[in-house]
Amino acid sequence: MATNEVRQPEIRVLPMPSDTNASGDIFGGWLMSQVDIAGSISAHRYVGNRVVTVAVDEFLFLKPVLVGDLVSIYADIAHIGNTSIRISLIVMAERERGTDTAQKVAEAVLTYVSVDENKKPKAIQKSDLTCK
Ligand SMILES: CC(C)(COP(=O)(O)OP(=O)(O)OC[C@H]1O[C@@H](n2cnc3c(N)ncnc32)[C@H](O)[C@@H]1OP(=O)(O)O)[C@@H](O)C(=O)NCCC(=O)NCCS
Image 1 (cartoon, protein in one colour):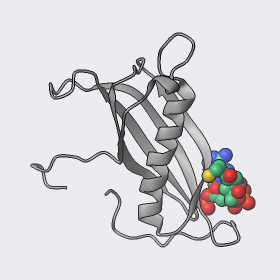
Image 2 (tube, rainbow, N blue to C red; image 1 turned 60 degrees about the vertical axis):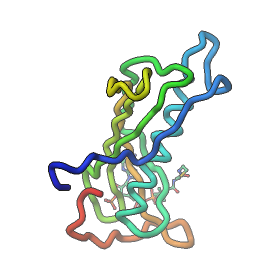
Image 3 (tube, protein in one colour; image 1 turned 180 degrees about the vertical axis):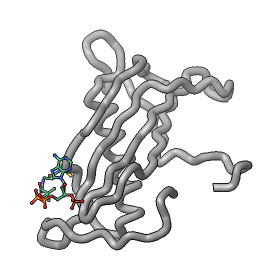
């Protein structure tokens, strides 16, 4: 990526009141689901066929996410195996939109497996592309 390019998130999403837990913060499971979606998009882009999540290697909730935060999830390829691909993800939340004050609220590492039409592991064709 050229140094003057602005990095694009894999997804951006706005949590709604229906995504909160009993204390009014965004439910951790909601965030995990969004991270899984973002990671799968990144893995699929590299692999070029269907992927399934095999492992959540790491998931850290660093700060609470609130209703109305603009949540952006950034993905990087951390490792490419024979049939698996590990994706490292960072979740940023912007509370006062337009003020450039996004904070890191979570980070995670998930592993996906490339699968064929029978849902069996399928070898990944490695290319020079190691990030989007
Ligand atoms: C993912 C799945 C196809 C793997 O099948 P499997 O027969 O266990 O495959 P293998 O043992 O050959 O492992 C395949 C790859 O996954 C990796 N893998 C397996 N278990 C893993 C784990 N716990 N953590 C990290 N990687 C793992 C292996 O190291 C291997 O990677 P490599 O080929 O790059 O070396 C199978 O476990 C499955 O269908 N799981 C359910 C997936 C799912 O429903 N996910 C949620 C919805 S998307």
